[in-house]
Length: 140
Image (cartoon, rainbow, N blue to C red; front, side, top):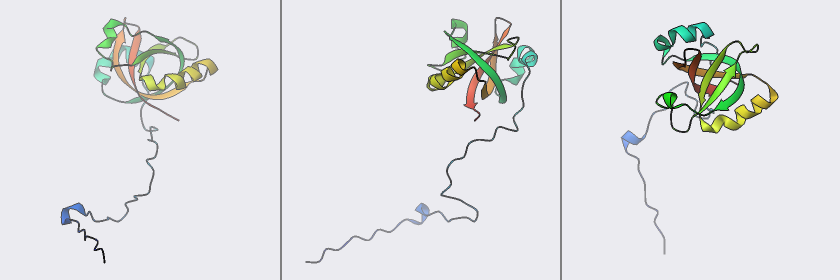
């Protein structure tokens, strides 16, 4: 008794032609943030509303985590934590809203006193002296 295997044919719409230059085996590489601008502390304090939605890169030292104040909850996504970052001298301090999955990585940077290199979007200014930033990605 012979068993027939059913023939399967693909519809023409299901088959996409391979175009020259496509690499289907490539692993998603890390994003290149080298062309992103940096924003100064003074610029973040004075021009945050006009810079909303734009991405910038920065390198600051993580100091410690804080509870998210009620005034900032409307600017934050669910579960984000507030991290204070500082310049090496401590003269410029900013607040960064970090997703919960990054806490362990950043906690190790706090303990080792190493800088965090990251991409961010300006959100608002808290109490007229702390620029608030939204974490986008870590630069490695």
